[in-house]
Length: 341
Image (cartoon, rainbow, N blue to C red; front, top):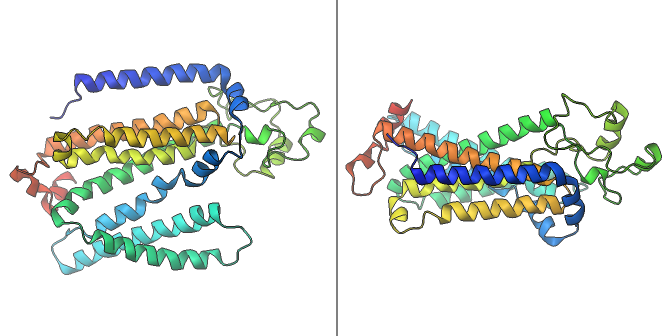
């Protein structure tokens, strides 16, 4: 049975310690940090504002393409259903990625019939992606099936937790209270003379339970008139979406040769750096506070780490091995999938 090593527990303790220290700092200095780093026109912040969520948006096309080339089932009909399901996941993923993310960030709203273009380009990208995955050897593709499962689980779990917390905390965004920001209502000072970030609340305050005195229906309507996401600051969705890149941490477990060549660290460090860059950019662009990105970061990190442990325990319990020299690798077939059900 797989067990977390002593080194793993130490690393988990250090990670939690870092989280706790930053959370305490954010409890006292969230607002001051945002004021100091505020630079919404910064190219770095703009870059990650547009591209930071990319790992989540491309999770479905990647997972669907891997599913498309699996050889599950015992009949031609079952094989065909798997291919249809995989192609459907790829297409729907690209439809959302292009129609929501790409057009939303890079095209002006006045362009007509955006969804027509989205449907067209989603079909082209789906065909190209599925064709590209056809070049991967069958043995490798069988291993990548588990990567697809892990990728989907990481994306769904982390982002589901974040969306639930956003609804419960209902924290107001920094940008909506900052004079001169396009997301700040023009009538703010006229309706609330002397307003000075009066809607700010610390991260530990759950606004649906302890409602700020200033947050009347008229107050909420004022801010939502210019920013639909005015009250969903905590935690950071962009940071959580970026953390989907942490699904790469399962790759060395599926391909032991990478562990033997001491390349395992790359699959941890690079996603963590990328997620960190996205997190900092969200503060700079005034979309989130330090505590927002901190929780988004560690929700993504914690989800990936927990799911990795669960998956490795399942592999250990079912006797599934990925060692190239071990005959147990043949368990990555329809039979092993049935055992896991």
